[in-house]
Amino acid sequence: MESKLLTVVIPTYNIDKYIGTCINSFKNVSSQFYKDFELIVVNDGSTDNSLQLVESLAKDSDLDIIIINKENGGHGSTINTGIREAKGKYLKVVDGDDWIDVHNFETFLSKLKEIDVDMVITNYTEQHIYNETTKTIDFSGKYQENVIIESIPNERIPMHALTYRTNILKSNNINISEKTFYVDMEYTLLPLKYVNNYIYLNLNIYQYFLGRPDQSMNVNIMKEKSDHHLRVLSKILELYNEIRGDKKLEHIVKNTLKYLLNTQVLLLLAKNNKKDINSIFEMCEKQNYRWEIDMDKKITTLMYLNYKSNNLFNFIVNPIVNRKQKELGESYVN
Image (tube, rainbow, N blue to C red):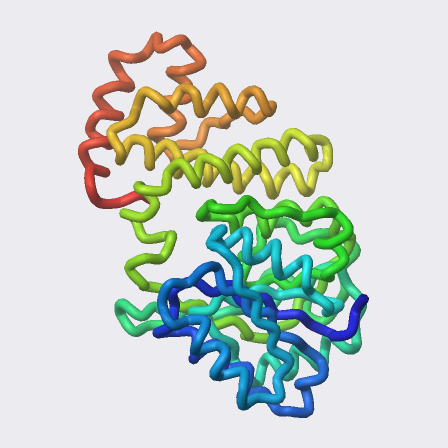
């Protein structure tokens, strides 16, 4: 039953240094909007003071803050929990180490009252703490503002820019992989099968905090969690096989797979695990995904062509791959 306009799900795990900024940004919203939204803070088994801080912040506030304390299950499990418990017509995920721009959020709530749509796209800002810079991701040059489009966008929209109609997620049993990193790919793609329309609102709401050493996109974390990346690749491959023939959706998923597959190949090379790369290509072909020649992703293209030729070109490909493997070493995945 919908009793709110918007549910904001806040995944929380060992971020006691940051969660206050997140919650306080919502507390700074004008109280006239408090009736319109709820916060569902999902504490994913934190071992620091995150839970206690949220409880303390919730005590002296008229905000509708629901705190769910659960065993650790990963980012996907917090989203799944939030979806199950949501009572808002719309749902947005804001990680507990990120925050909102208050003025734009208030305008966002006002605009949500006036529309009825499956998906909303908004802008966001990357807050790069390591060099104290910001970068605004603005979709105004790509999408017409304030107009409901009876289709889906022509590209994958990042998680920070997305708000879904909650019923899209609930009724279609959208379930994000648990105990797995990199599940934002799943969250941005799996619901698209059920999205019939969207609107772009030129509002910069989400403030995305980048640069923590333990964030999932840290290179060393990516190498350590390459099996997690593989799980997500496998799930998106399954999606691709399901939606083949839907030209627009197939194009979006295919472009995402190009990125995921290339990244997986480079991760395996960085881990000195070249032997498993052919099994990745085999997995792709079982789901009817064929790697296309793409010289911007030279190493993956060469390895795939060699795989298709039963390693006929080992004498050409291996020296190039070995150089790349040495270059990646301990450092960089692009």
